[in-house]
Image 1 (tube, rainbow, N blue to C red):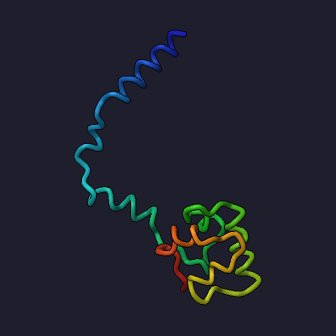
Image 2: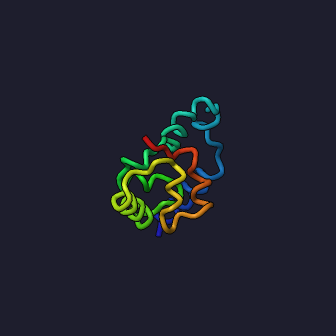
Image 3: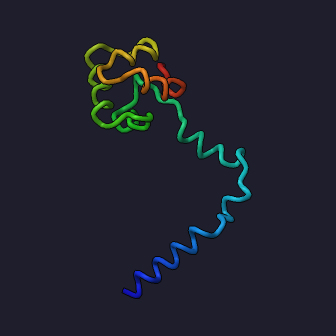
Length: 102
């Protein structure tokens, strides 16, 4: 029981204190993290794991993308990705800047 009380006290202290580690970070310093998350994905070479890095793409949809590519050949343009069943307008709009075809 005393460990639970200590945990609650610590969590309360952390939640109520300012975050000094983040206080001085500017947008420029945070850019490398954002850039890594926003990396371009070549839909003609990406495997299931890489496709799952796209926002809203789970394993099932990533597998459908790979299956579509295997059945129909490489995508000629990024918008061809919209032909994959289950990839709707919203998902396309969220990721369109990150999807490339090479």
